[in-house]
Structures are given as structure tokens and as C-alpha cells.
Image (tube, helix red, strand yellow):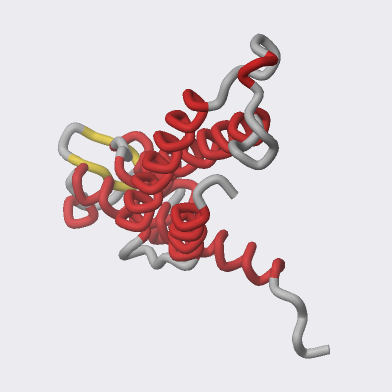
Length: 168
């Protein structure tokens, strides 16, 4: 472990994100991203302190003094992948367009319809009355909520398959 205390915070934050609700998943994503950024910064700083073992044999530290470059490189790559994955997840909740909202509604067959359309005046299903019209902002907010709920359901399903069967 490079930074045990910070790594424990990351693990705890990841666990909280995996157990998030649709109401708090955005905030938990932001918290996890902040910790990932802090960890990544500290690893980069640590990398600067470790001599390149291939180019300068005299600068080789005593065993156990500093982590191996490969350990640092792996930590950077893993952290970067996790950061990118979490950032994409957060953006999927926070940057929904009107067109994406229509796609989400059609995929889910929202209100029994798979013919939702984006119009200048808002979003509604084909042939719907004016009372069925949603503003684009309402549609975007609802689609974001659906995406968060889908993510929570995926997390729950994944966690259920990872849990050992205790009823046996």
C-alpha cells in the first residue's frame, strides 16, 4: 500500500458509492472523484521521488525504502481508469440533453409509449394532448432520475451476485 489511510478512505467512498441511492449518487460520485484526484496527485508526487532504476544504478534505493516504479505505475493506471469511469458515470447523470431524454423515455416505454418526441415546445409522445407535454427541463430531470435508478438497480444486482448464498 502506498498511502494506507487515503486508500482506506477511497475504499470506504467506493463502498458508499456502490450503496448510493438515486437521491445521493451524484454527491457520492463527486466525493469519490475528489478522493481519487487527491490520491492520483499524491502518487504522481511519489513518482517524482523515485529514481528511474533503469537509467541510474547508483540511485537505487535500499529495499523497502520506496515503492517500486511498477507499483506506482500500476496505482496511477488503476486510479486513472477508476476516475475516468466515475467521471463518465457522473456526466451521464448531469448532462442529459432533450434528445437523450427522449431516447430514455422510448427505451423505458415511459407511460406506455415508445414514440416520445422532442419538440420546440417540449417533450411528448406522438399524438399526445397538450396536457401530456413536458418542458424540456422536466424531461431532462426525469431522464436523469431514470438513469440514476437504473444505476442503483445495476449496483444492487451486482452486489447480490457477489454475496455468498447464506441460505444453503
